[in-house]
Amino acid sequence: MVESFIFASKIKRYRRMALKCGIVGLPNVGKSTLFNCLSSAKAQSANYPFCTIEPNVGVITVPDERLIELQRIDKPKKVVPTTIEIVDIAGLVKGASKGEGLGNQFLATIRETDAIIHVLRCFDNDNITHVDGSINPVRDKEVIDIELQLKDLETVEARVAKWEKVAKHGLDKNAKKIVEIGQKYRDVLIQGKSARTVELNAEDKKLTNDFFLLTNKPVLYVCNVDEGSAKDGNKYVDMIREAVKDENAEMMIIAAATESDIAELESYDEKQMFLEELGLTEPGVNKMIHAAYRLLNLETYFTTGADESRAWTYVRGIKAPQAAGIIHSDFERGFIRAEVIKYSDYVRLGSDAACREAGKIGIEGKEYVVQDGDIMHFRFNV
Image 1: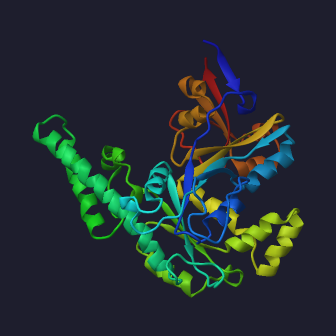
Image 2 (image 1 turned 180 degrees about the horizontal axis):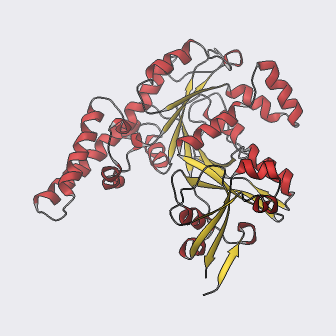
Image 3 (image 1 turned 30 degrees about the horizontal axis):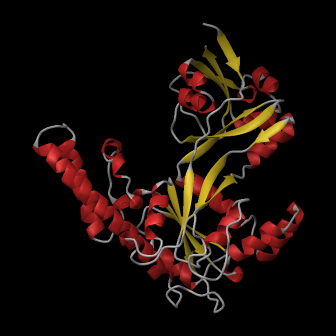
C-alpha cells in the first residue's frame, strides 16, 4: 500500500451531496417568483393558478464569505462553492391527497425532497388573484398541512396493517416496535398534527425511515410580504408566527417581488444601495438559503490551495473519515488521519505554511468530529 497525501483540488472524481429543498404553497403565493430569485433556472410566473405544471429544478449556490476570504488569500485557479438543489413544485389545492388538481404530482415530487420551504402569501394586492378569494396565510398553511397529513395517514395505516401481520407471525423482531411507532404517528395525524411533532429517539426513527412521511420533513415557513414589510413584517406575519410557535420549524420574512428586482441589478454596489434604502443588510434570498442549509442540518468544511478553494457540504456531527469520503470513497476507505486548520487561524496567519510553522495544524484521527469552517487535508492509504 502506498501512503498518499492528497489535496481535494487535485481529485477530478468526487462525490457531491444531492440535497434538495422543495418550494411548496398554494397557487399564486409567489413560489415561482422566489424560485427565479434563487436559481438561474427561470420558472414561468404568471397571475393564474397552476402556472407551474412541471417541477422546475435549479441549483443554488450557498453564499459564504469565508470562501471569498480563502480566495483572497490563496488566489486559486478555481473557486467552487457548495450548492443545494431547489425544486419549484406545482401549486396545491384542497383534495390533493385524493388526487384533486395536480395533487398526485405534487405529493410524488415533494416525497423526493429532503426539506420543505412553505411559501405563504402575507401581502394585499387586488391585482394578484388568490385561489380562495381572500388573504389568510394561516388558512393557506392549514390547507397544505391537512393534505400532507391526510396522505401521511393513508401511508401510516397501510404500513401499520402490514407490520401487524408480520408481528403476528413473528417474522421480524422489530415488527412490534414498528407497529407501536406507527400508531404514535397515526394518533397525531388524526389530531391534525404533523408527524414531525412525534418525539422519537434515533433508533426508533431509523426503524420507520421507510414510511417516507411528508410531514416528517423539516420545514421553513417563508412569509412573502410587500416591500414595506420586508424588515419588520406585518399583521399576516404575526398570525403565522403565532400559528407555528409550537412546531419544530423555522420561519422567515421575505419580499419576493423586491428580491426579484434586486436580482436584476448587475453590480454588487447597486444591490447594496437598494438594500440600504430598504433598511436591510443582505438580500432575503441569502438568508433563506442559509436557513435551508440549517434546516437540513448541514455545515461546511473547506479545502484550499493554489489550484482550488472549495466548500464541501456535510451533515453536522460526522467524523473525519466520512467527511473525507464526501470528496472520494478512497479517502474514507484508506483514511489515516486529517490535518485540520481552524478558519480563524488560517485567515489570521495567511497561509498553510504559516499555520504549520505556528503549530496551528491539528493532527486528527478517525474519531474527530468535523467542525463548521474547518480547513482539511486528508492522509490515506491506497
